[in-house]
Amino acid sequence: HRQQNVGFLKLFMVLVLSGIAMHVSDPDVPSSLRTLALEGHLSFHNISHAAKDFGNRFQFLPSAVLYPRSVADISATVKHVFQMGPRSKLAVAARGHGHSLQGQAQAPGGVVVHMKYLRATETQVHAGDFPYVDASGGELWIHVLLESLKHGLAPKSWTDYLHLTVGGTLSNAGISGQAFRHGPQISNVHQLQVVTGTGEITNCSTKENADLFFGVLGGLGQFGIITRARIALEPAPKMVKWIRVLYSDFTSFTEDQEMLISEEKTFDYIEGFVIINRTGLLNNWRSSFNPKDPVQAGQFNSDGRILFCLEMTKNFNPDETEMMNQEVETLLSKLRYIPSTLFQSEVSYMEFLDRVHVSEVKLRSQGLWEVPHPWLNLLIPRTRIHDFAKEVLGKILTDSSNGPILLYPLNRSKWDNRTSAVIPDEEVFYLVAFLSSAPSLSDHDSLEHALKQNDKILDFCKKAGIRMKQYLPHYTTKEEWKAHFGASWEIFARRKAIYDPLSILAPGHRIFQKKA
Ligand code: FAD
Figure: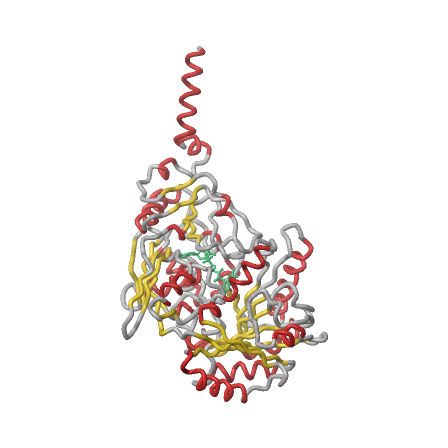
């Protein structure tokens, strides 16, 4: 009898170690996943990091994390899950740098693909008349920039923060102060390599598999995992003149912004932000702006008023300084900012583009980076931006001390309406980003307060009939998603049925349920 028991015990240990026991207790994690022949590997332990993101509010544990060495690894894993068919609930999420806000790059009980480990594509710059760079979907934009700069080149369109991945921002849009001229990052891609929801590896562009190409751009990871992207480049300037001016009048502020983005000869980057009830232009975590007159800028007091800061840059090379200064002067002379509030600085192009990282390092050292981020990003049509500002700035929001509020215009004509990105139905619309952070994980009051404010803002938009769209959208019901996509829902759902028929990919958005 004892011998039999020892035999059973041994068999049990073998089953546990080989994962078969897991299969017995959890049919969604089949032992067959472990038998996949991969160049990289799947990890079933130490996977809690894949259940975290920048938002720091949603945590869904996966069953496994794939560390891919090759595109074939990703394809094999997705194909395997696809071939298991509807009997398995297993889903697959690509994780870029995990800078999502509400679990969008997580896969509850599923497989998270750690895109950073995909080193199949070395970042390769192609100079010439129409320069471009080929980069892995898991590459950080900062690395794409560093590689491009070696050739005197740089991508044209950016996000404010560069420690995000190529695949992650292209799944959303990628918006910053250059988008008024070049469009968002999704308007600056020539070609993609994608692993679809059936595990197929497919190249796509405007000429080849165009429906997949446009679907994936801004497609929230729903149609394929971007494994490689070909990104347009331009000659990189060495320096930028970085300027901030202040307004107390919202109309002058927005009219000037709109004028600047409509001009042919204008700044190279145009953004803006709102200062409610606070002192100083410098203590904004989102940038390392260091003007020539730091004392005046640092002490600037809004005296309880709401102020609006217009932020601009002009690119230049050292031998063009004089011409650049003249152009800047001409442009500034057209603006109606408060005259004593012109703050300027000159920094390298690299320093400017990587500005948010400087603040990240500071905040990390103070334990203030990995805190909850109840962010809300809205795209507001131009015709309603005044109604929006009147109610939200000063009434719903009485200070901006929990984080920056960005507010700047974009133009629809620079967006390709064949992509999956959803934007308001007007030529000019505003990105309004409430980028608040709750000081600590345990400070539930400030988190609750910020979330309530977000709800109030969304409620107001609904009641006032403002046809805004959420950027980096978060919804919990299919009805809300349908409303978000509006007329393009049908195309979105059709593409899902073609490229990810079992709804395996990017479950964290909760748009589609895995087919049962
Ligand atoms: P993740 O958060 O890991 O993934 C985002 C989504 O894309 C998920 O659904 C994921 O499944 C999917 N995904 C990831 N990789 C791939 C892939 N290779 N193929 C297909 N799907 C994939 N955005 C702007 O537009 N402009 C800004 O200025 C800007 N500034 C930011 C500043 C900070 C500090 C932070 C934290 C975010 C900022 N963002 C900005 C938002 C950013 O674009 C999103 O967080 C985006 O999700 C990219 O982050 P990520 O690369 O970590 O992707």
